[in-house]
Image (cartoon, rainbow, N blue to C red; front, side, top):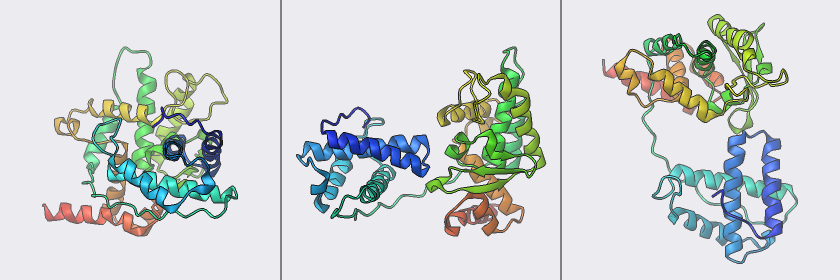
Length: 313
């Protein structure tokens, strides 16, 4: 609800201060944007219902707001908000409550809304042969003068999201200073829930990353001070949407017609490397640390995927 306007000056201040707070906590720019939108919508709801001081907030107001967002339309896609979207709203309210307590606002009721159950989507996993086909497609030949640069960046992208198993936002936020070529370690500084972790990578990955950074990335950057790993032809950092669209272009370049029709994205690469590591005998706990999962239960989904594939043979 980015077009909503707050009239209440104290609410305007709270919205701005909240965004600055989550930035300090280390949330990605994308998460900051959506959390700010959620808080703005909540404050606008309070304002519309003549609740003009945050200190007068009551438990019933959370429930009334949840009823409102549960019944309003989804402005981007039509229909109602998904359970996942509603859960993100609840999570933002919980973080906003934490922010208010941190600011010294007293006697506020905690958020007691219960998150909704989500239907687990079927996880798509590519075979190791299909991964190789994607890498092969990065040898695309063209008369376009930037094609060779894009090919190197594409290989680095596949390396970060497949070989290193990073989430999309983790890859977008990577800096060249986060990569240690001597130890072959990537330092993920802005992981999920702002957790850090160290991710090892192979000699082949080392080759692709060094090729991109030292031979081609330098041809795009406008300033030596630019630290982002992934750079567009404008010389500025690439966002997650642009990386996703580039990945889909690579997908359409493969010779395998079945692979071209699959509904896959950057996160598919993460699912794929986790499955391949497990198939190759890596311990589940090591895969958990590699992926940055908070719970081993989350990692165990890949065990089920392997068992499912085996039963279909």
